[in-house]
Image (cartoon, rainbow, N blue to C red; front, side):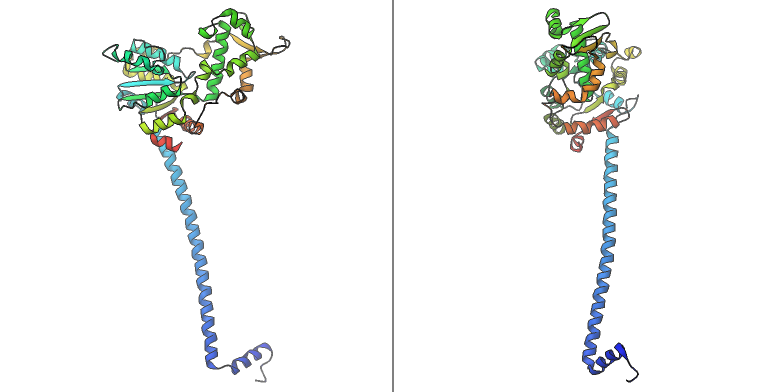
Length: 368
């Protein structure tokens, strides 16, 4: 023992003084501790692997869900070329109702429908249920295409509440900011040429808007013109958000109509498909355009009252570009809107379709 020095010697001395039972107990305890440590290590490693697997599964689920959403969206996009999905829908429908807010291709579609059907219906008949019975009994053969502006939520819901497997409803859509700007331009032209029931009194309208014009230009008082926009009537007021409301989306979801949303710039292609099945003799005349902004001849300028007219004139186009985003909230043009989030999501899908044409289903409403 003399050769053992330091700590090893002390440890051996302790072991020599211990009995076999105590040494066995220590060995058992050490074995148990090592077993626990090994189990903890295995658990940690297993947990890490499980966490990694869970993360991979979550990623896979997300990617799978995203892929299903994209696939679902793509399945509801309709093609407007001949023999594509929209052509097939039109071919199978016995009744086609074409609806729209103001400034969404409606006048062009109404003129087309009148020529195609070789018959006219009361203007905007789908917004006037008091005329529906007369339309039904007018002739044995009810015309197969009807185009009509929809003026309010109630008119839209009445149509949606009457689903039929043989009826196709096509609603032309325009983004509201663009639609309002177009409505304001039309209103300015109507004021300048004293057209329409609202602006036909030349003396009153000239005094109200301080109208000054020649053969190419028309100057209006800015303050009076802004008040007219804020009145939110006629073309300005017959808006998208007055039609596509929470109640409208609920009605679509509950009734599952054959309903298609189509961007208004696609009405030329729509006319071609309709003519193919209902008036092929018109194909060489298409597209029919009416009330088109390119036909407006007068350049409208706004003058701020009380300032020098020679230096304070702004072209309406420039004015709308500068004030458009602020105009809707400052004049509270969307004060009666609801469920606009659904409309925004619908627009995202509609504008992402190659032909900007979307079949709407109950599942669509859930997704939006």
